[in-house]
Length: 383
Ligand SMILES: Nc1ncnc2c1ncn2[C@@H]1O[C@H](COP(=O)(O)OP(=O)(O)OP(=O)(O)O)[C@@H](O)[C@H]1O
Ligand SMILES: [Mg+2]
Image 1 (spheres, protein in one colour):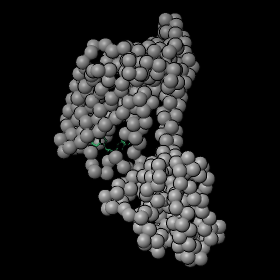
Image 2: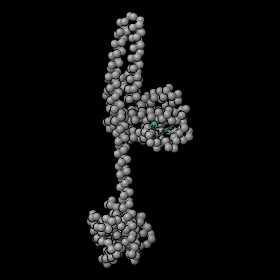
Image 3: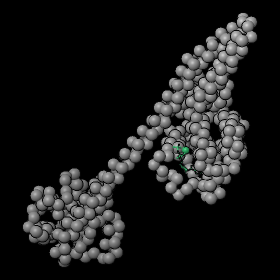
Image 4: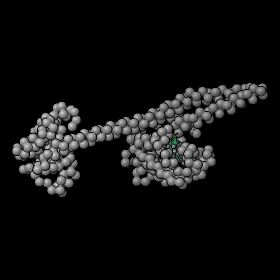
């Protein structure tokens, strides 16, 4: 028995129709180790329900009562959501009934002819109940903290997209504006200078300006894929071609549709997912081929990226410093989608699924907070 229980005494709710049996039970409980025991005897359903409102350490219940029963009381206790040890004490209880009572959540059962066992049985039930309570509280805390972590990760993803859009806008307005003006000025000079040495300098300055313009467009594109304006299908097609050109790994893109009208937030999540999947292929897979398959069927958008590389190592998904795939799960969550990974010695497949259309991703532009409407800085010039 816990020290606090010893100090304040045991509070037992007793469901029992016989006053004599109640006194006998009480005597056994007190006898246990001379402890103080506070009890209340109830014998009807209404009495039991009312008493449940009070604070108890345990419930001891007869099995058969006139118009009520121990099992019915157990159901009421369960429905109340309170976690209390419930010990059945009965004049006669068959094995089957006892098993049923235990299945229904009783902590223990014993015969009235064996009341000497009551005190230790009750102590044991109280202790087990405390452990269960502590475990449930810890589970609840863990779930809450997981939820918080997931919300934080989603918030970060959204913030990153917003920040990227803001940086792209600044590059467009400041750097892009200045480079366009510089280009204009240099062209003017080129038309007005005659000296070959100066002409040469101006041409080389024009080349540098063109290079800087290209570089800022590339940076803007990475920050904010303008190609998405042409739809996800075109964007993925373009990404596959660029991947193949850049890495030399064959990359095939197939789509069930030529054009798809998707909420912009969904398109952005899909785009970033394929981007990360392809980056992973180039970083880890040592693949010769990769295939991207997009399909929309029964209201679910599905994108599969499959490579024929080495497959995931056993510890791949628990690496402390790897955030790509973790981030994909969080990203998918922001549009109510999910990511699945499967792998074998012959390669890895990553699948993103997102319900779209009537199943509830229409209002997402506003939901995710991505500022995808209006002025798009990365649309400054086509990539
Ligand atoms: N296509 C793939 N083929 C083989 N292994 C892969 C593939 N994709 C991922 N992996 C393995 O899974 C691990 C986790 O990938 P994840 O994208 O989460 O992290 P990362 O790429 O290592 O780092 P980052 O946080 O930069 O993305 C990788 O380190 C790699 O070992
Ligand atoms: Mg990665």
